[in-house]
Amino acid sequence: MKRVIRVLLVSMLVMGLIFTAVGCGGGQSSDQTGDDQVQKIVVGTNAAFPPFESQDKGELIGFDMDLIRAIGEAQGIEVEIKHMDFKALVPAVQQGKIDAAIAGMSITPARLETVDFCDSYFDAGLIVAVRNDNESIKSKDDLKGKKLAAQTGTIGADYCQKVAKEDPSTEVRVFEDVGVAFMEMKKGGVDAVVNDHPVTLNYILTTEDAGIKMVGDIFSADDKYGIAVKKGNSDLQQLLNEGLEKIKADGTYDQLYKKWIEE
Image (tube, rainbow, N blue to C red; front, side, top):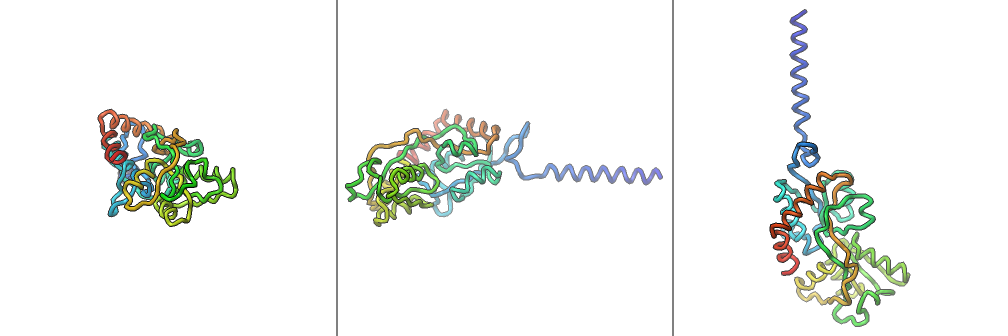
């Protein structure tokens, strides 16, 4: 009888050790809290918004890509970046499919209802672009009744919809890739593209025979980009904020700005 009891006790101990080992073997390193340090985060992006994010021979490049990698390096964490549809980024953060999203994403009241943002890392602003031969549109005040285009999910698209609401004769088209919107305008399919100023400027400077120009002044100058995290994830928010502060202090941020924005 005593032998049976000893065997049962040994079996229970072994099973307990097995369950403990399994419990400690989870791969969700980005969800660790308390004294456990985050080892890796998965960050979503939409690589169709140069110079902030784009793809070159399968590699994700751009200001945002270098920025989040630099933040990870400063904080001693691995950063895995996934290319996704822009509209899927916020839901993916909400559902925990990714830990954060960086994609030239404007911090807006609507988005703040569903996700939290780290400190803003870039001041953008909108600009109107038209074909070089277009003389009828000289600023945003001339957009009513025109055919407008923007990238889906952006504040540029929101502004176009606002114009259409004020004047129903205005047509609005949205594209997944802003480069496609510019090409559509060059072909005459739309009259103007409303988009973030640095992205439009980059397109003009880097595209051979772009055939477009910017008109009027930059508006919505309070448009700021931020890194989105799951609502209530203050640990990750603080971690990223600290990393951003570090790379601004040591000059890394300025180097990236010169590389991608000012070059």
